[in-house]
Image (cartoon, rainbow, N blue to C red; front, side):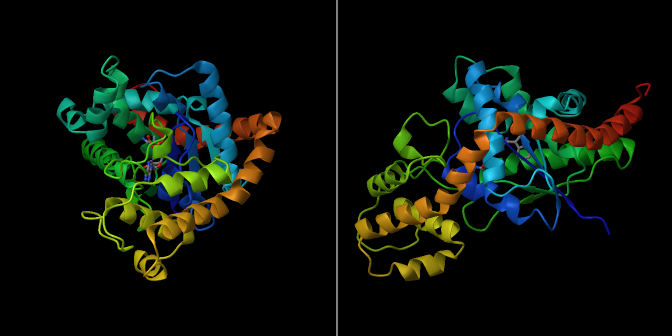
Length: 330
Ligand code: TYM
C-alpha cells in the first residue's frame, strides 16, 4: 500500500518563533518516514501583507534552511517554494468560484488581520483560505499538520473539497488536520491571552528559533506570571504559568501533568529559568545546522529547483483532472 501523504506550509513573513516550531515544524521530521511528505514555503500567502522584496527573498531561503536544519531531508521529503509551482495560484482561482463570501467572512484570521492592517484590507487577505485550500488539495493530501490557529482554514478546505467532489465526482482527497496535543497554541510571553506571533511588534512577546541562548533565557525570565506562587496548569486563572508549562511540556516531549509534577514546590523565578534553558537546549543544535546550511546558497537553489520539479509533477495530475472536469480543453 502506498504511504499516506502529508502537506503543510509556513509563511516566510517573519523569523519563525517557538510557536511555529512547537505547533507545527517540530512534528514535520517526526512524520517523514511514515508518510510521503511535502512541505512548502508559502511565499504567495505573504503578499496579503506588504513585504520588502529583498527581505522576503532572504526569509524564503532562511525558512528552507530551517526546514532542513530541523531534520527534513530534501532527498526524502519535497521541500519547495509555492511560487515555483504555478498550479497553486491557478487552482486557487478555480476554487474561488466554488467558495462563498459568507464562509470567508467568518474566518477569524481575516477579521484579526483586517483590524491589524486597516489601511490594506486587500482581496488577497479575504481569499487567503482558498489559496491555502488549493495548496492542500492540489497534492491529494491526507493529513495536514498545523497549529490550532489554522484549524478553521483547514475546515474550509475540507468544505470546498466536499463541495467540488459532489459536483464533479471524486476529485480531491478530503484532508484531516493533525493538531499536536502539546504546543498547538503557544501564547505570547508578555500577553498570554494572545497567540505568540512572528509579526508581533513587541519583541518580548516571542522567542525566535534563531535567537541567542542568553536572549532566550532573558525573555523567559521576563515572561509575565500570575498572582499566587504555585506552578499549576490553569489557563483561566493562571494564563502565564500555564503557557510556560505548555512550552516546557512540548519542548521536552512530556505531558502537562509530568511538567507540573516536575515543578511542584518550585518558585516562579526558578521555573522560568528552567523553561528558558530547556528551550535554548532544544534550539542549539538546530541553530548550528541552520547557519551551515544557509551559508551555501547555491546548494539551496539546487534543492529548490529539483523539488519544484517534483512538486509540479504531482500537482499537475490533480490540476489537469480539475480542468477537464470543469470543462476546459486539456
Ligand atoms: P503560519 O506561517 O502563520 O504558521 C506556520 C505554522 O505554525 C503554527 N503556529 C502556531 N502553533 C502554535 N502556537 C502558535 N503561537 C503558533 N503560531 C503559528 C500555525 O498553525 C502553522 O501550522 N496559513 C498558514 C500557512 C499555510 C498552510 C498551507 C499551512 C498556507 N498554506 C497549507 C498548512 C497547509 C499560516 O499562515 O501559517
